[in-house]
Length: 353
Image (cartoon, rainbow, N blue to C red; front, top):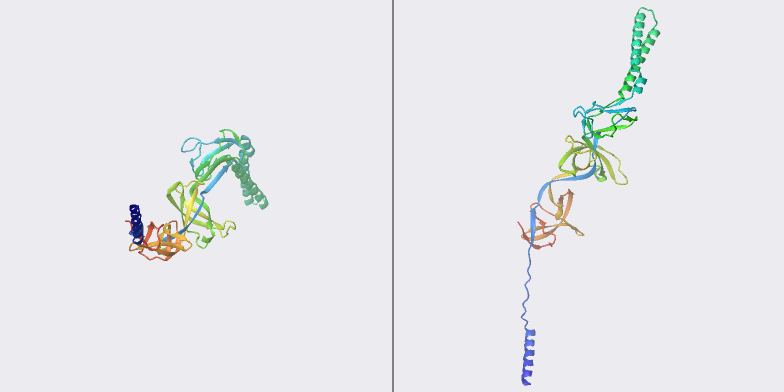
């Protein structure tokens, strides 16, 4: 029994001693340095652009229609020695299609019209000779001249009517539409025979935001790209600007024209235009992606002696990637461009190379 009491007393004494003299060691606080990448802030030029899209259209386009009814006869292409096809290049004035109609030709009566002109000329010459000798009056001479003039007009009209039977290429370009007609079939007057386009020069109608109206002028240069041709950029010009604002979209219409000599852009292609509306030189610029925006404003981090310092900044013009710094940063300061997301003011950092 005494032995048990002795053990309990010793245990209580040991517990009391441990409570009064704790020997547990506290873990030291370790301030870990966050890895970051930095860049030196420099001055540069920065341009602000407005982007607009639209459909590219050919400057020259003509639809050929039949001026008379008759028998359809397509000619052969003078280069390929076969009937014309879609996509063929053609030149202005080339014979394209003949429309034949014997009844139409007979109603014109070209030979009789020519004979009537010959008789009218002979009569006029006769009357003029007699008039010079005093044998006819001036009125009679004028009547003979009138008959000759009328006969000339009749011949010209007959030739014009006959020309309607010959369909020639109206403009140089490429055949983009060619409705199918069986050779020697009968077509009606007004039938669409083909559409020719010359898209070596094109235009785009674009909608521009209202806030650019005082900045975009006719004659300004425009960069033109197509999504299927990412490596090819064409240069165009703002040729026309509407002074009216659309009340629903708050935009106005501009027309851009450009040369397409290599025919890279096809009619109807959806293209993007890039128009410079403002440019500043020798200004501080930084990447837009490093800016943190919240209720306190726009802020970034700079590094000095392995410590990150928060800076509240004011910005100016911007483009897709870069932005102007008006205040809050100085040239040659080291800006954090990677690893800034978790930083706080005066965080310890380790600059990665």
